[in-house]
Image 1 (cartoon, rainbow, N blue to C red):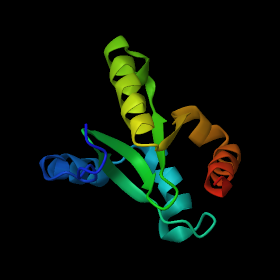
Image 2 (image 1 turned 60 degrees about the horizontal axis):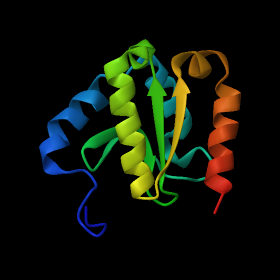
Image 3 (image 1 turned 120 degrees about the horizontal axis):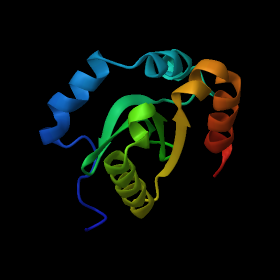
Length: 123
């Protein structure tokens, strides 16, 4: 892969991104309430942003930081393989990836936000 090629929000993923934005999980809704409108450390996040062939739940272009929220489906072997491929691709493009599971969002939002803030503050 050539690093200078267009990798963000490729047209063929547009409908999928829109469908995911229009049908967020409960955990995504809760985290988005905390991230939207630059609420967290005045940092802009986008929802359902695609990078190469993958869509991440949230992305901050300025900090090259992606966030994924994993529900129970991520315990399946085929999904774990796809998640590993996504992580490898993001690493290739020097994009940091944070993963949280639904329970962390529901039960420990303060720690989730602290972790995100720490990564936003890293240079």
